[in-house]
Image 1 (cartoon, one colour):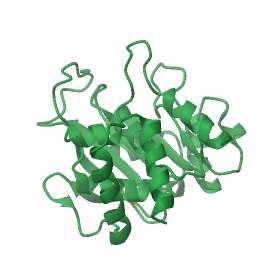
Image 2 (spheres, rainbow, N blue to C red):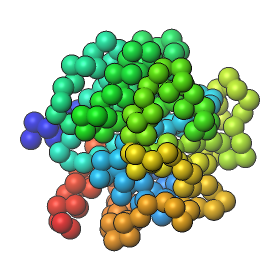
Image 3 (cartoon, rainbow, N blue to C red):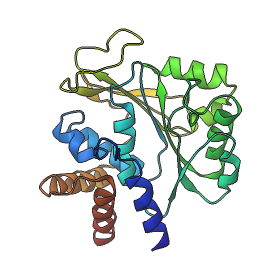
Length: 255
């Protein structure tokens, strides 16, 4: 009960009370056509089994944070959420958590991670933590340059991020540095790269080709995740915590 309460409060803290906005769930993003149902089920099947993931886009406001948060509803039920803050990451300990960073970036906000903090965050992968975060980047090579080349993170720890998910505006991103203001523009997943934790990342998804033949599949689990999403889309619950409760209950019932 204490774990569930903590995780509920963590997810509720991702809402924006100043604007009276709740964080969008994956169900919202399916309805907005950021994800199609098959891609959403595939992502859920991996995240629900502990896959670490980072979302990326070049400009601000494209939807990387929204996308990152939407998948938190499907993190394994035995993991406690923790926020990685500068200077405090090593206090998280050895017990596996789902550790979230607001962003890996050298930009101004004080909660962002860079240099030693970025190295400490990625090093958590060696203790079995599920890592989740954001980057300002449009492609895997750019992220690799930021994390491995600039921050001197070992290649093995970079590969521990199983999924790099890139988001863009339909029709292409605006010029670098331009923050998106048109909230009616459709956001889409335009690239996904996957690693099993040891091999180099490979492209496994593009909008043109969909999920490619090298994408890892557990067909039965994906089918079950798709069934859950279809069922949940017919219900009223859309909060991150509410969708998480439904998913964990559904998993118990279908174990």
